[in-house]
Amino acid sequence: MSKGYDVKTRLALVVMGMWLMGSIASSVVATENFYTVDRMLTGSTNVEFYRNVQKLGFPQTRELLRYLSSELNRLYFRIWNVAQLVLGPLALRLIWRRARPFGFADWGLVAMLAIVLLMLGYLTPAIVSLGRALDFVPRDPAPPGMSRFWILHAVYTTLEMVKLAVGCCVTWFIARRTDG
Image 1: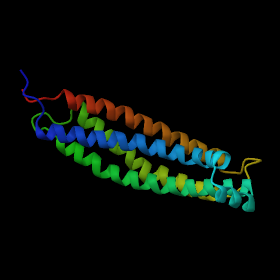
Image 2 (image 1 turned 30 degrees about the horizontal axis):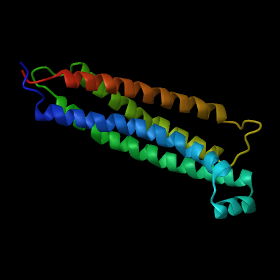
Image 3 (image 1 turned 180 degrees about the vertical axis):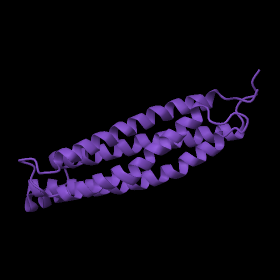
């Protein structure tokens, strides 16, 4: 009969919960930042906001607000990627078993950290740089670099989903460990 989870396992589950929820939250926030611009422009009941939109013009206001959303997302992703470099090693340290090192959960965490390093070291800087070069550039016709931006964005999103799936599996494996 199992005695339940030891303290390290409990803490590892908390850290994994933070990591998974942070990944989900950052994706939701990034998406909602852009949708909020259009929702505000089409549905705001704030009279002063509406007057300012009319003064500046709808297309100019939209472009300006989308630029603000882009800058916020760039900041949030950099901060989140650095935060993951704290959570990952902490989780790995908490599940480390000297008698049985490098099981699935250990390798899963290493893979998740490798993904974060790729995002932080290459993908995020490339997306930020290219995105800033595309800010305030007319979209019709599509400017040079737009297709590369979307490819990088798709790779980032795919790796984020892979990391999330691996994280769910790692959490499940950690949860299965109990003191016997």
